[in-house]
Length: 381
Image (cartoon, rainbow, N blue to C red; front, top):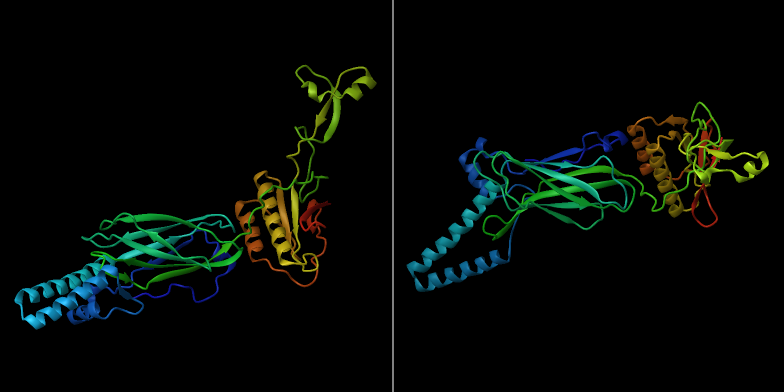
């Protein structure tokens, strides 16, 4: 019999963001084939630890009817009433036996996504397998508990045939970044007649990382200033806003690019050659010192801005690395490197002291508080 599946040791940062985030559970019923007959019989009357059998409304009504029939049969000595009473008892026994068979040899996997953000729907799934050979499982549900959020029930709306598996998708939200706990309890069911609500008491509990929420509005990223080894900006022709140089007009050039002042000065048509805003890469400096961020609300805005800008620059292939607090510059070349940065932001906390201005021979972006209570950008390098 399985109880809690929670890890005994605190998971590391890498374990929280596993490449294959699957957490398995099993029904809490022992394998009956290896037990003696008396243990099988005892199991039907004395449920294992954490199991609960609670009568439903119809179940309580059936119990009251059985008591009434029993009293009437005892007082009248009517054989027909005793037959009806025996039928009611047989119905309860069959209900309990079928409910046991319904849960037997059920296994499930909890599948969490590798990216979870605060304030956004998190899509997950339960893969439920029926290991029985002859009998299907039906009318079951699981109870989802995520931190302090309200509980959510995950219903299996179709039966699982013997030897088959079904994936049930569900979603939930987490409002704060950091380490969060998800627990799936179950399965539960009122099968087959709805007289008893049977809870197996089995559950799976896992911790996962929640990244900071993204900004509702994208921030304007400063233009790169210079070419360096760490993150250079070689200016090239594009459709940006910065003037790269002037050249003679060629057939087919857009009229809106004509530089009229230069044309009047030189006496011939001159067009503007604009620099490409998409060139150049940056290094982000993440300073979590409490001397810089005076309150928690501003600190959360800062983490959200860092995560948003990092994702935007990575998509544009303009993020060369980051410097986290007093650590050196770490390059960002793959998606896993960006995930590592978001993991650090999810676990970030204010510390005493100052991380310094950051050292980088590239275009370094620093984050500073503004007078209006927001987070601003400063480009150095």
